[in-house]
Image 1 (cartoon, rainbow, N blue to C red):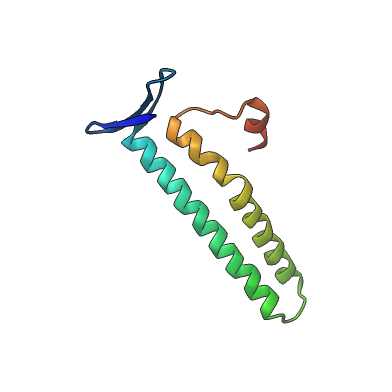
Image 2: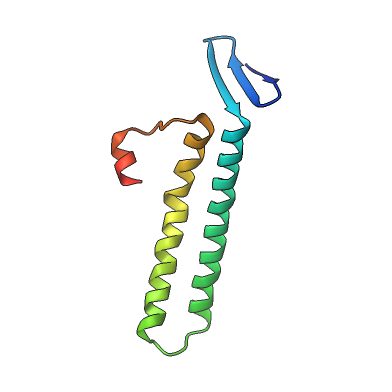
Length: 104
């Protein structure tokens, strides 16, 4: 089982069974927290924008279609790309490989 030992600037989680250890620094926790909060904000704001466009249909102008497609694309980014950045921010290394790195 993991045991946590907290020092002044880092949290170390170690597994006694197979000698694995995760070290989370204050900087990595802050980065992951900011990325997580930004992801939630991206999702919430774009859902509100899309709901506004769907509920209050005005003239079907080109700018409205453009803004709706931009909100949908940004929502998909918030759902698919931003969550993949939280764990690498915690461990301070890219864990998903080269193919996903080029996609993200």
